[in-house]
Length: 304
Image (cartoon, rainbow, N blue to C red):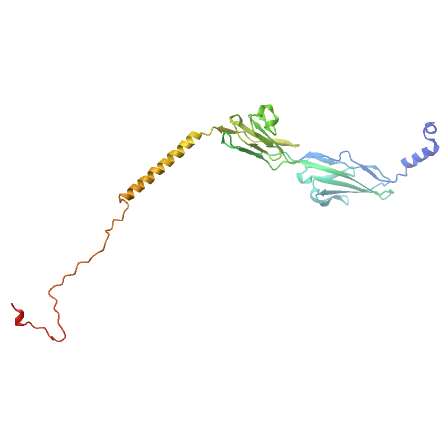
């Protein structure tokens, strides 16, 4: 009676054909196409056959990461690095135990049903394995003069997805821009939450305090220990006075050296002028003789 009122015999027959033994296409669906799990935990990649006429359709899983495609389940066996960490559930869904960050990627479930008119179907599941951040490395200047630039660094490289960063002063969270909050209008900082850099264009006394940073993502968070940033006044008068003292001392040293030169303290101690040699004295008398004299003889005229 219901059929005769709503559809008629012809439409009822068509409905029986479509929903009975005349299914013409294999169909798939997933309970969760974007699963997310923390590292080292269990995750199920859901793939369910909605319609098919084939009793034992062939099931395959492939992993796609960047431009690489590799088998995960083929010929009824787990393949690759999942060989000892995964299994097939219900004949089609893929379950990964002890998930690793390297398991992140796109997984394609493929089903071939030989007895269906449309014999092939596929569905893609995007898996994200999250990794909790480790303690970030924080660098805070110890002391900065008033009016000078200051840069604070916060970074960690283990978390996945990439960490975002937040700086705190005396346990109070700082905004991305000091001008965005009335409480920090007297300050002049900007925070890059992606790089973890907190930049003060000109520090003032109000910026002094204990600073720490927290790195966080969907898997968790981690913080570094607080470090003190001191801000001190720059003593211009003292600097100028010190420079003047140095200049005066250098001037006095220069004058002293000049005076010493003039008084001859740095003159050469060796005597100046020519050096003469005393004539050497001979023992006895030198006699001269000429070629025509022959042997020398005393003559009577030489005797007085």
